[in-house]
Image (cartoon, rainbow, N blue to C red):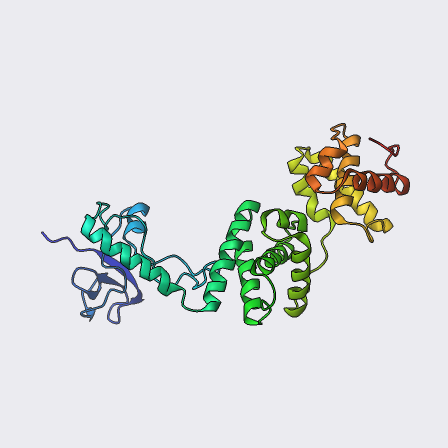
Length: 311
């Protein structure tokens, strides 16, 4: 006996008012009570295959990966996989392997057709490499790629190094997503120096009107505390110290990383989880002199109950 599967339609029968069922085997819309056929040869808009679990559904689907700005063609072009296996997972013969190799080589050449695409290919690969080294999230990488693409469309790359503008785009995206990285951190993973990145950042932020707010000491606090393996109590006290310093105007004209490092150093003393100035300076990428000077300023202007000139 033939099995028939049916799905309930959202419409009601015009004769009895009951639900209308869709018979998948015959392609009919039929009333579940009186049997009135409302439509014949109904077209099923779904896939022609069935899947009984998530693995089968993923394996049988024919949709590609979503569009991404991290690829020069946004991932819309055809790609030939580097694995020498067919659709069933079996290894292909040597004769077909040679044909696939030639197709793969020509496909890689065709995907990059002009100078702009070559520029994007190199720059976006650099962005991906730097983002991976800094362990940045995917949406931030997409944002940095968008900034770089806007710079290319505005003809801001001419006369400047691709690496410098790519690193500046990544730095701008970090500030935009409130995940700040210092210029020193960006320069460590980039192939250009800190001065070049800063110059390119100022130029593209002005031309593209990014209007990014300056970074604050609080933006670095969570990351520095985590890297120094300090407690939540220490983080809360350091946050209070930074807010007190902002009220007193001690943050004006001071580097955010240096002030954050000094607040963490003061908080570590108060909660008796003290870290050396050298360890804090290494984590925040400032000098020990900077940590010491900012710490003495906090002690002199705020009532922290700590004596100055700690070593």
